[in-house]
Length: 345
Image 1 (cartoon, rainbow, N blue to C red):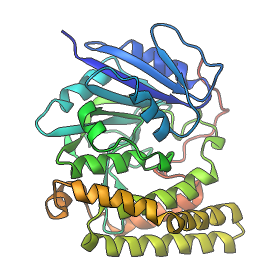
Image 2 (image 1 turned 120 degrees about the horizontal axis):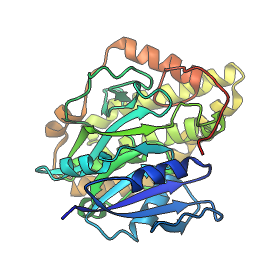
Image 3 (image 1 turned 30 degrees about the vertical axis):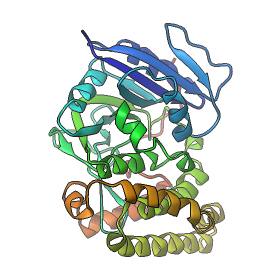
Image 4 (image 1 turned 180 degrees about the vertical axis):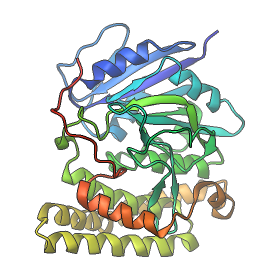
């Protein structure tokens, strides 16, 4: 019998959800329960899809969707993806391997389908993440091995129901950006592995003509980016390994804020300062979560770091910095052509 899998898709607005659902429902070799958690009260879709209305960010919506999940494997997709017929089955196969608790698929650009959106990421000494494949890098077979990673994008991932419940699900305070990395990190600390699965291919509309610039708000990029990075490090790193990256992070974010303000990019600079302030004002909440996570961890950082940490060259940080300043987005330096924005039917 085919494996039974629950698929949860969080939807905010737009028509891309139609393409996502059509592709998911064409999946082979699996029996699916499909749940869409949407902010749009006018959205309708038949064909056995369960609709749940819920305002809020993706982290909150996925947790709400989980309340209705019936199967032991939970797949999360964003509403701006298109999956192949075997995408979900390939994720499931890898999730069945020994000690694996969560898996991420290969993400390719929906517009330029031979280019990467993402292929997993690692932690660096600075506390920032190192994406193995920067958005827009051509896929020439360089990431075809199934390997352990710290995390990937929640646009396409699967987790064991038991593990998701035991580690506390998504942290809703993250809203969007980094919420899946925090979750995957806790999967590792719980004693499970996280894998990148290249045989599971999903096409993602991030950084394409299908996603207008207004999707990437200043609040999301700068406030959420600053807040979530700092909260994630404080929560998941042991104290000896926290001091250096936390210091670097605070200095980098504060310097970036001042730089934006000096160059008259007031909204960006102000959002970073608000992110720093949020962390200070909510230290009690962050430390409470840290106490829970560190108190229940089953793997030491000494054993974990060889799997989740890498040291990229200095050029990576330089390119990343200027890409961040130019594009105002996490996860890509590729600057594709700019045709008129046309949402798919």
